[in-house]
Length: 430
Ligand code: PSV
Ligand code: MN
Ligand code: MN
Image 1 (cartoon, protein in one colour):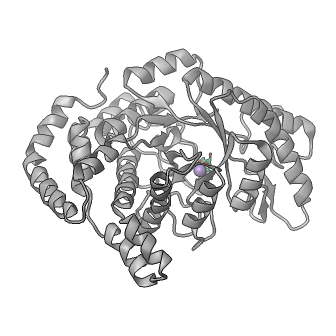
Image 2 (cartoon, protein in one colour):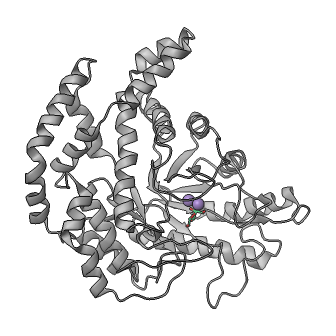
């Protein structure tokens, strides 16, 4: 197996921190055992936790105003694989890459798959892109794609999604994620019902091409680039479309795609209840789709979402098994560092949610003891599970302190030499 970061360096750096980690781990284990929790079981769950990294997240994102490229950004999907392998090696919890086509240009998929295999990396959901025009494209998506008024445009958008399925099949991916920017910018511009009908017609053709063991994930978003209405505006339109299309079509929740203060954890609960939760795009935001690092602003909200997810696991809810993925845009940080941090923050929410005393919570809920129910959640949230996460990484040959090892490795400076700087697009393709 190829090593993105020399394992000897990781071991050497871990050595310095291992003694203190063991002490902290034992102390936390002692504390948790007082409430009947076995730290070893939690560590095993942390080790089993898997998150996909977006291929486009490996480059500096930028906004619609500017992009300030970083040093040594990946210039192609192979270099993105290398960066994703660094993230996984150090964090131990991101073994999957989620590609975005045609941002990721691939000539030979078996070569790409072999390359990722050589780093021990697999492939998550495949993302289609019909929200931009590509050079040489016959029809423009200016007025929409899957829901466009013109049949020829819809056919072109459907054909691209079918191609994505085929490419994903070659990578052994198991899901297609569809987000469209379709919608309108002016009241009256679009007939809401007809646009939704056209979207559903196109989506049906895509759905019928899914391999048996695949799922189709539809992502809702309330605005941008359509600022008045979007065709898949919210989880309501999303679940309606998913129900209309069939069992293999599920909704994907991107945390940044809701109005501020929306109760996302309740949306998650509803989707779980109706077997329609396909997956997540984790990120954080202050205003809307800011694509900030996961857990950087609202760690409690992220914890409450995981509280619903762990509750579904605990109740062994039928049809439950969402895909977890990051979807962020890094403007001022090294994307590798942001993705490592974010992966750890998402994993942290998961482990904290596992600490919740579910029997006590249930009893407080049944007895309408609002204060104690809330305190039960807060008690779990307030526990610092860092030693569990660090121990999971240590046992998985990752880094106790991933950012410190990454910085000590000089990886970014090396890529700066190997990958000369160039201009850039917002997709992280330079
Ligand atoms: C749209 O805002 C989105 O969240 C979708 O997931 C896209 O595929 C992704 O961002 C691209 O940046
Ligand atoms: Mn997204
Ligand atoms: Mn988004």
